[in-house]
Length: 210
Image (cartoon, rainbow, N blue to C red; front, side, top):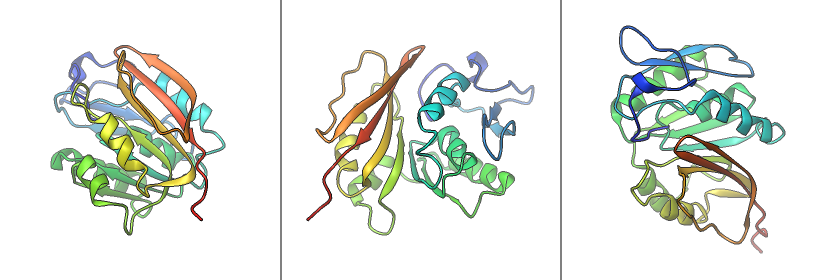
């Protein structure tokens, strides 16, 4: 995830530190379990902590295999890569920073997952506003925008414009204390807190279009 938080030098259990700068992302489970991938030494860039990812994917055990994944504000791609490792059919990673996007693409190739993962170097909100033509819908979405920039609510609103399957799962991570409004068709399934962040997993239960 791309976040404006303390740099990698103060990272938690999300990976290992590299003497050459940057760090390592560890895949927790599935096909690529225990694989270590390089992470750029970029301000605010660090993987979602192992504990949070493990908890989240325990909740998503039945939903991940066969899923079409959308990883918005992808950063390291920790969540999308974990989903691919655990059986997701395909994943679209959206990351505005070109260097970070290139590194994510390189890691997909390293894992041999280049055919299942696509990296789009673009602004996530602008992509959502443009619409899902030729891209959606997705059954599993990870939304982790930079903190304190007011991006969560407009992204949630745009996701409802054809980006989601009727029964999609949506994971939203924001700064702790931020109240977010979600559509009536989204029901809160579980919630997890870690440091200054709160992650909420929602299940969409919308009626199919007539």
